[in-house]
Length: 292
Length: 250
Image (cartoon, rainbow over all chains, first blue to last red; front, side, top):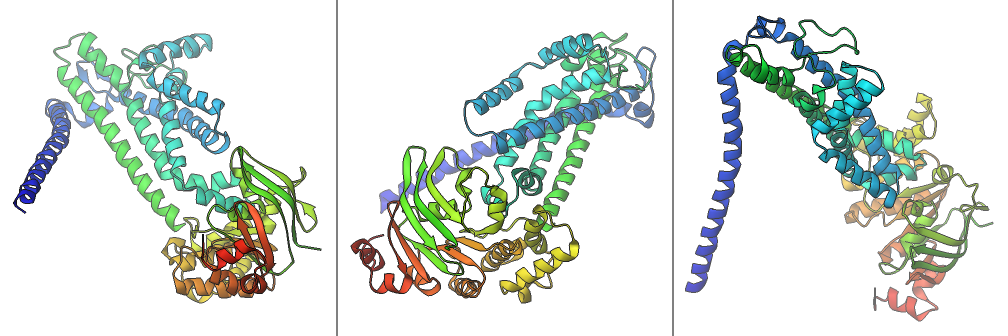
């Protein structure tokens, strides 16, 4: 009896130590995130103003705003999603719903995973070689969007595949047993169920795309371009590259330090807002799927 | 002519033979129960009748299965049309995450019916057919997930009936349900017999006794005995059948 009591005590103590440890680790991750955010907010908040987000850069990028970089980044996000989302979703549908298990599928899967592991600068070089030079798009939104699209393609494919896999087979069987074709089953039953989760892939890719610098370096980004792009063949400024420029190779790095933090803050806000928006969409569609 | 006729059916999952030389015929507007211990091949046989086993990789079939005189494994068989004619109800209720109405309308829509009046009419008829109308008439556009398990299963039957099949396959349709829901489904099967040929897989021998006209006893992939239900349960000809129905194994 006494022995058991001691055992219980030891067990309880070990448990509280383990839990305490896990708690500490989890909270320190959150804390770290907040420290980074707070740092950027404190340093960058002073320059944030209506002018900052609506005006062209002035005085060798030490004054004025970052309007063209914001617009450029939004264009790149939109362009790359227009490419990566349909292609990625269709590829995932093909892989999960149509291809039978076998070496063919294994190879495609392995390649997709490899693609996800390729350093982004390599994508940049590839984009330059293919889109900018070979296809003669030049340094342009089109070339940049396609390059970024390629970069996030594996993310879209993988999250879509996971979402499709999560759809219970009983729904597929029910549909097929009613004489529905595979495509009807996929488009009318499987996709609506998987859609909220597929949106998660979109969220992740938006965050990734808006923050990447290397892929746009040689394909679209302009060092300084005080006007908005008017076509997909125009060059554009972009937030991450602008941030890089004014922190490392601007005309006066010290003078543009605050601008750099402001730019970083805007970039974070864009990612945050798009995440919130996508989350809201996801919830909305999630509800709709059930009620529909 | 028999509604369903299987001749020397052998079926394989990869190298494993799941069914051995099954020859079995079923008349129109009868209920046939398939019984036997787990893994005996009764569900496999059932899923051959609407070619659901096609969905599993590396399976193959020898022999012939005729429905209304057509070999459903012939090359020119349209599987979608076959499944339209041979409805199926699954072990667990599996309504789509759609409204009650849309669940029943789905089969009509995928089969090319676009006239909203026709769809509505058929949806209502089918829901009435499964005696669910009084319970759901005020919430047709609510999610099917709000229904109880038994109601969901009846909805799934309505969904299968809406596209007007002539055969209904039921794979242990009540094994996930409570006794009251089970009774309702059994009564329903009794009603439906007048218009449909029903094949039901069941683990529950009382159920087989209650609902079926004929019973087929499967064991280790073989059809051991097939007879009128009354005869099979009161006077089995094979010892294995005798042992199984008296509960000595299985």
